[in-house]
Length: 324
Image (cartoon, rainbow, N blue to C red; front, side, top):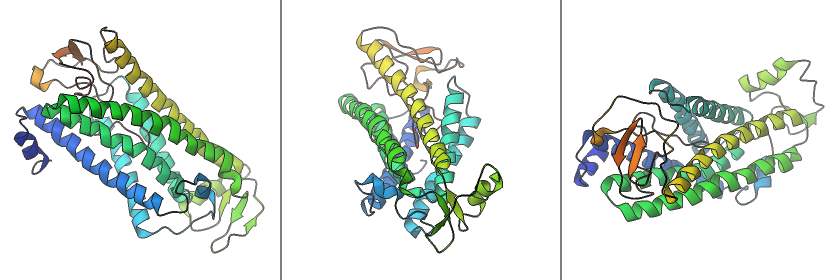
């Protein structure tokens, strides 16, 4: 950010301190998500479950992962763990609890899928989510550089990609969990063997279920209630994502109609100069003539390029294994 992206921002004509910071942070996110989405797509393409979601569930439990896949998955998990930290050191906004719930669910899914040998499913979900997160930082960077028309096009592609990635393809994965998950025969699987034994009554011995996460290389059991637990968390993420998508569409509709659209998620903050206005992250606060951000109004020339000039300089990403 200091030695690469900030000098690039200066060359692009950005001069304010806040603008330089915003550009550099969005550039970092663009680089991060571009690398990990590309790597995730490569791993998925070079797998038996490429365009065949049923294969996500075959040959379970897969106790061994290739080194590249393991590094990819654990680094993504680390990224989302730090999102929880960042969310709690920045100034709280009105959707703090939704964001916190999103990050907790995401990290829970990544941890449990990794230790429960379901990382294939996690790989697919990360791919359909991360592609969206490459487009929004790109659109914001174009806005900061003054490329309004290209910015508008990028923002439109972002909206379309969000809808198909997070509400169509994502739900296909959830449907596969519901439909194909029980391809895995219910039973307990011992190390070095795919021969299952009868499922013990985990309700009578909950420590057996918990032990599976501490010692994933030992005996691991698969039951329908366990599968339903994963599906429940996936659906909870979808509910949060739908909430944010509804807010984005609502803002867009209001602006198209010529009305005043305010970011209801952002709390009032101390006044700042126009060059240092900090909009609410993720969901834009926009109107035809003004951008309402944290209790202040800043002029904007067009939609949607004016709509995406926001983004907290503290919270580096509002997007999921799921998004916001």
